[in-house]
Amino acid sequence: MVNRTSVAIFLVSAVVTSVFFINFCATVFQCGCQSLWGEADRYCNIHARHGKHCPWCVFGYAGYAFVYGSMLVCQAIPAFWAVRWGWSWPVRLAASVAAFPASGLVLAYALGTYTGYWD
Image 1 (cartoon, helix red, strand yellow):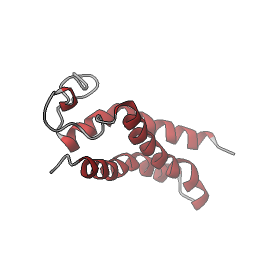
Image 2 (cartoon, rainbow, N blue to C red; image 1 turned 135 degrees about the horizontal axis):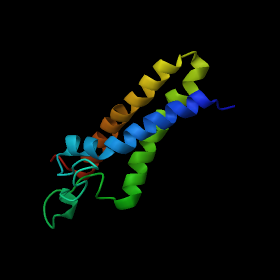
Image 3 (cartoon, one colour; image 1 turned 135 degrees about the vertical axis):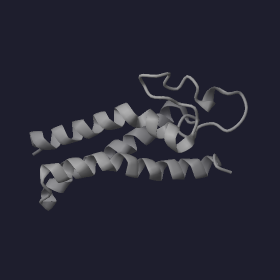
Image 4 (tube, rainbow, N blue to C red; image 1 turned 120 degrees about the vertical axis):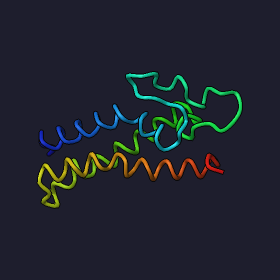
């Protein structure tokens, strides 16, 4: 049975990911994206006719769904399953929020390498 604390932990971490996803992308790829409250993807290099294109944007909505969904799955593990390991809610919350940049770096490296973004 899923308890309310686990759901709350997951929702908080998912909100953090949702709000800062584009900032993380901009930091890692230097693609021109800005915060959601700024210009968002208006200046992303995906809109440029020539040159390198952001590895997260180049695959379109399927790419976004894969990257974002993978991050959420990684956040769900400490939010829901770590309760079985005896982790307290503050530790699970910290681990769930930390899963965003940790999984994001792995995904960024994988897709950046796959697409040759840093070549």
